[in-house]
Length: 126
Image 1 (cartoon, one colour):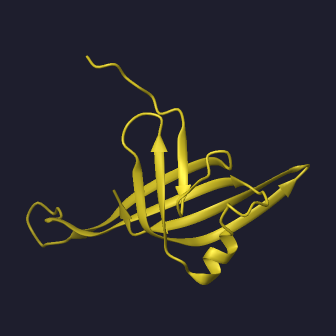
Image 2 (tube, one colour):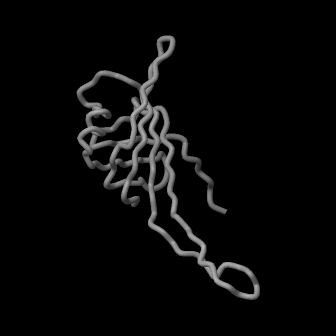
């Protein structure tokens, strides 16, 4: 049996800039819409499924800092700029999301701590 290795750390690269100290967490979601193909048969069961397109979503929790190297998330969202995100894990192959656009940006501040939640949709995952 091969040695099991756990993913403990990841480095997020946005537009060619590593944001490893800035990113608190990243959650990745992939989905594919399925619709039942109904028929009138004796078994009263669906014939199969019609497949939709794949969808990729990222939710990033980040620190709010003022630094020229960090992307202006609100500006990227307003301009509708398309960019690429690469996630490199401590083990295994990196994952690259292409055709990314920001859907929403949420800022929060409380008792000396501030953070930003960025919702991103991507066209491709490799």
